[in-house]
Structures are given as structure tokens and as C-alpha cells.
Image (tube, rainbow, N blue to C red; front, side, top):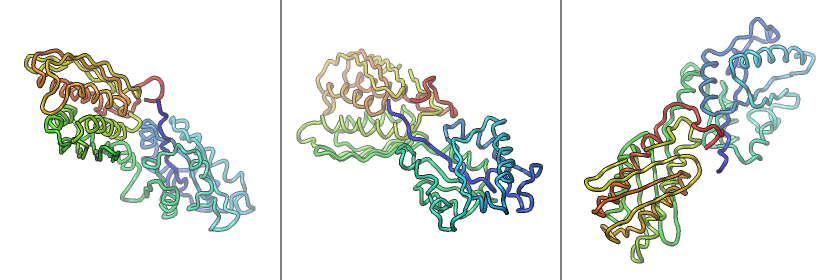
Length: 355
């Protein structure tokens, strides 16, 4: 089970967490005020799995003009206030600014944050610098993460909404000697554009997406002059990887999904987006092939899908018509995936702490 990358919000302090005080009031505990909306926004973001790291420039801190005690008391009051609301910061990086404006440790320099880059577990696609100055956006660019500028148009409620409810999308390009595949999924949209060169397989993938409630675009150029094996296997691997990418750390999902009759055929499908691949497959097809797709590849498709999606799939089908049996499996898998993929909030559906 792979460990998800860390999603970190690198937060400026003055003007972002607390209202920036006038210089003559920097040591006034009574004048400390929070930026509007910051408490509920951080609570929502924290519940969604983000870590918080304070990154701030404090000019002259520790000098005669700005004694250390003058900084520490208001700063600790701020931390205590956030802690009283259940908000905690993973770390603080505060530059005292003794060297020069171009010091590597001073924003927008990244000297204070090199350990996050060296650790190798920072999620660059979903980590952000949030601040109220252009230097914060420059810091984001230097780190290689996103940047959000707090201003009159973009406040804390809008930031929390944007980060917590963004579309869940995943795209995979897979190229081997046998196949060239591009897959794009959007778990919060619908529709399908599919071309694999195997008409019946296209139809099955359309059923999977339609009944799964997600948008799927898939194009494959495979070595069908040999047989359909590589096309079916690699499409399943790319599709599972794309869905897994869209799910990110899998917070808020239903995780489980449960049966579908199709005429005389009955498919029973259960899915667990557990992060652990497993397949149980029971089927006795009357024919060896349907619509240019060998029935032995049906099991192989779901095996490959479970591996790259990191999901447990249990599939069982009975019936007399091979077409109906295979279609019932794909539709049933989609129907099982629909509630499992659905987003209900921000909680992680696991007591282990990760999926």
C-alpha cells in the first residue's frame, strides 16, 4: 500500500492568518486580530487532509528595534488561539531578515523550505502557497506549487471551497511496444468517447463509465493484428491508474459499492477501493468469444483494473447468453463503482489513516 504524498499549504502570517498590525502596535496583544473567515476555512482544509506550514518574513526580528520577546508573545497568542479551535501547524519557518533582501532564506527564496523538496513526498499538484503579496506567488513559482493571493476578490471561504471541491480528474498516457493509449477520466462528469479498435470492448467500456457515473475518454492503438490481449490489458491498466489519480488520497469517497440482472444473466459485483488490489472472479461462459473479444480476456481485464486501481473486485455471473453475461459484468462493475466513487465529504473512510 503506497503512502500518499503530503499536501501542504505554505501560509504567510501577517495579512493572511492575522490582520497585519501597524508597526507601532506589533507588540500589542490586545490588537491581535484574525483575518476574516480564516478559522472555518482552515478547519475545512485540515479535515480535507492538508497540512499547514507557516512561512513568514519578520524584518529585523531579534534586533534592538524588534526584540525577540516583542515577536514571541503575540505569535504564541496567535498559535494558542488557533489551537483552541483545533487548528495545528505542522511547522513554522520565519525568516528574521538579517542578511539582505536577496537572502536565500527570505521569501521568495526557498532556503527555509528545502527539506520539503528533499523529502521527496511533497504533492506538487495539490500543495499551495497562500499569502497576500506578490512575493508569496513568486515563492510558489520557485517551489513549483500553486499560489493563491488573498485579496478583496479571493477570501478564505473562496479558497477553502476551491481547494476542497475541485473536479476529480486523472489522465494517463501509456505507450509500450504493443499499445499507445491515452485515458482521461472526470469522476464528477459524465459521457464517453472511446476507440480501441474492438467494437464490443468499446461498448463494454461505455457501459462501465455510464453506470459508474464518470466521464471517460479513451483512445488506444494496439497490435490487433496479433490479437486483442495487449489492447484489453493495457486499457485496463491505464484506466485504473487514471481513476486512482483522480481519487487522490480517496478522502470523502463512499469506498464500497454493491448487483445487476440482464435478462437471463445475473451479475453480482462488489468493490472496495481499499488501496489493496484483489480479484475474485467466477464465470462460466458458454462461448469462447463475443464480438471479437475472447471471454478469457474479461477476467484479465478486471484483474488488470484491480491492480492499477488498487481495489478489491469480487465478480460473479451466471446465465446462458455470453453477450448478456459479459455486459452484465461491466454494467454491474460500473454500478458498484458509482457509490464507491461518490464524494460525500472530506473524511477518510478508513481507520488506518490512509487508503
